[in-house]
Amino acid sequence: MVDQRERAGLRAAIAAFTTWGLLTVYWKQLTDFDPVELIAWRVASAFVIMAAAVTVLGRWSPIRSAFRNGPTRIRLVVAAGLLTVNWIAYVWAVMNDRVLETALGYFLSPLGTMAIGVFVLGERLTPFRWASIGFAAVAVAILTVSYGRVPWIALVIAGSWSTYGLIKRRVQLAPAESLTAEMLVLVGPAIVVIGVASVGSGWPGDDAVWSQAVGVDWLLVLGTGAITAFPLTLFAYAAQRVPFTLLGPTNYLVPLINFMLGWLVYDESLPVARAIGFGLVWIALGLVTFETVRLHRRTVRLRRDPAAVG
Image 1: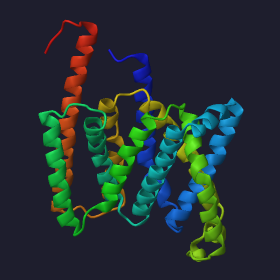
Image 2 (image 1 turned 180 degrees about the vertical axis):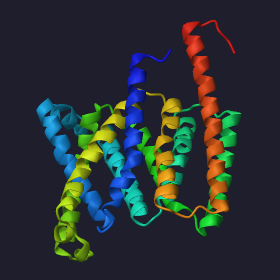
Image 3 (image 1 turned 135 degrees about the horizontal axis):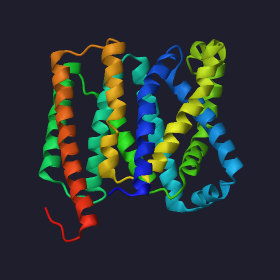
Image 4 (image 1 turned 30 degrees about the vertical axis):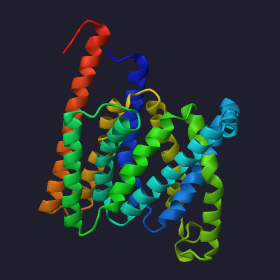
């Protein structure tokens, strides 16, 4: 059976992905501001929260050690960069009425995670997984025709998030320390972006948070730190405890919530061709899920009885 460590990781993953799915509603309240500047505020706010937490816990020493280690330092910088790309793509899409495309990106993300498991971690590519990759490729082609362009936002979201998960798995830091280290990498550039936006030099200054935010706006902007720290810490906790073959399907919560929001709440267009494209992605995910459950059950039987077969 699934051990206690793995169960705890799965619970954390479910909580993280549910929170991420619902964040679309949060970001929709901030559409008057520039997405890049909002990400800068998000980084700065998250850094304050995480730095305070690490200070209270007295856990700066592992972070300093991580930055003194060359390979770990590189991984933290890469992870921070991937996180920034993912955030900007997602927030920009939400603010430009492309929530369905974010849903597509997060539907494709588990397939990207699976591909990493196969091509990077050396997992075996089964016929079901080959078929799922084929369905996903056809789906992207159909969606390209439907949109009249390559769904690049979806592909950026899927690629950056899957790769971020891989990097996080290889950073040997506790969740709070890992996220704090990433925010430490990004907080300097974030402060520069906020400063440039505030004075309006080379930036759409009229949209700057300092000049436009009032009352509730400030609560939402500053709250981006909390909505960042909570699910990311849970994800970091899960990524170090849950096998990728189980972590991948758990991702489905994010795109499912976003799909329902984009289609039913925000009235985004879902023509027949686009619906077919999404349907093919769901078939691909269904194949992966079936294969994952089958293999997981077999693993459980082997744990209980090493002589078991089939």
